[in-house]
Length: 472
Image (cartoon, rainbow, N blue to C red; front, side):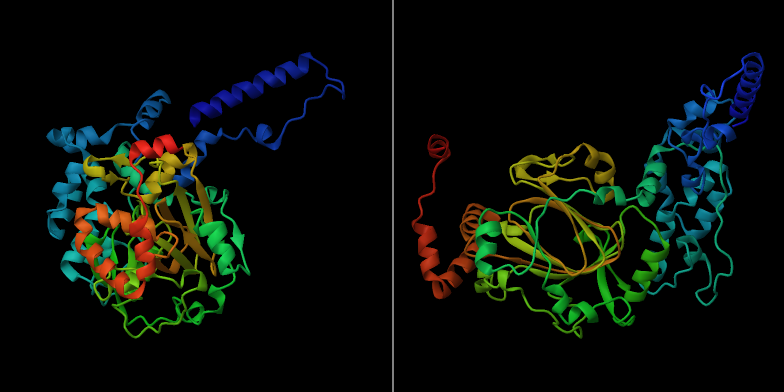
């Protein structure tokens, strides 16, 4: 900044000298903006307000800091000693094994160790290990671990700003936790409808397998007023998950909201209650399945039917990564509060960033925000939209889709099988060995309740790959 000011001062002196030598007429007088008059620094120097609280910068900034003659000393090299060759991810994995006393002692070793030992991920793991779901939030995970639960913090936590620590991994995780999501809401190509008849829905949307937003149903449901953050009791306990069902753990409802309010993270936890919120049996069934989705052939499977209805509660920036709904079923998502961003890709198109593995498996990026930052600007989704409170989105079967919660949201979602997509579901279950048990129960239920539909599908000749080519 000093170098920049000296340059501007020389430029100002040169301009003044030229003005004395050349007389300008009113018609040729140059017009200068306020920015030029005040000689404000260029935009690249104005991003200090979006800097990491501990001073961490991406590795590329080390080159620019050296060229600017700021005399910045790279503290990671000196502060880590022989551990400099270990990646930050591996160092954090090692630090995660320490106790709270050992972690505090490590933070006193050097500036570099201070930055690493202050990582909230480490203290979050310690907190869950020590207190489980019964912790009292103190503003940061470190304070929550170290402070007496009865004590109330009187001052906000102010981290030590360290100069000279460069790490792509630590900076990117922080950046993804704070990046602005609003630019991703500007595009939408899913049609919005009201007063839609069932026949028109089937012909225009369900048969062509095209998403549509229905705007005139949710607001008439009692749960639109009952299932809110303020009215649901803090005594309830939910099962929430960090990104996947295998990492689920219990947490008090009030702690969940306190956590999402005060703690920014790359992959926020979501409450995921199957079967209308089974962990909260006292919540009323205060909604009715819309007439467009009344037909559900999967109900003939009986009590062994796989999960098909969920209550979803998620903070801003949470969501679900690219997936195809199970068993080729269709779905609908009703939003009670907040906003959700949906991105769809046709079943024949593998979304950018999703890796194809062996045995027809796929591996999407683990974090929703990471995909938006890395791929959204260069991608061309088949469909995308922002779902607003009081709206229902029809999710066609087979489509790759992902969801980003733009705000704190509460939603209901159901998976279903209708006559329209029954053929695809039947063939998928029949051809998948892992689904053999479900297929047999499904067929047995259809023989009793919908024999004509089952015969129609069984008598339909399935074309081979060669027959499909020559027929087209």
